[in-house]
Length: 124
Image 1 (cartoon, rainbow, N blue to C red):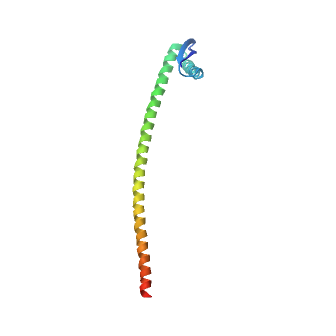
Image 2 (cartoon, rainbow, N blue to C red):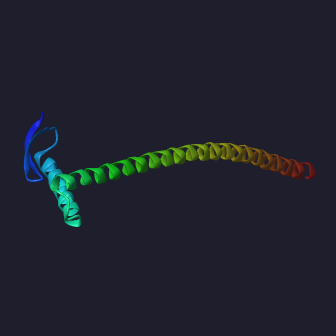
Image 3 (cartoon, helix red, strand yellow):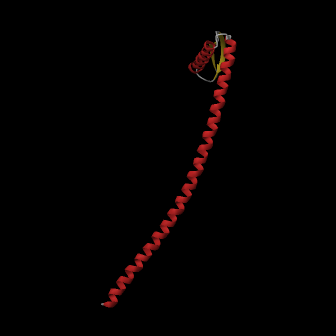
């Protein structure tokens, strides 16, 4: 359900419809107003409209860099998952080899015990 929310940006009221909570939307408006005020304070000769445009540019820049960072992180995670899969395959192969060697050693031990038993019986 869409919520009708009234916010003030650059001393102008806006009526918005949003699926988000009123608190969330108003917190966004507050953050935007703070950005615009800081931009205007740093550049005393520009209008609020110009400060708003510069703030939008800054937000777009931040958003794009975060999206790129997100894509890079996804790619890195995917590479790690592939590497973990390869390591798991190597581990499984190693465990199969180890189990095979263990079975051969067990058979050799059994043969050695049989030979020892047989040898002592034959000598008696």
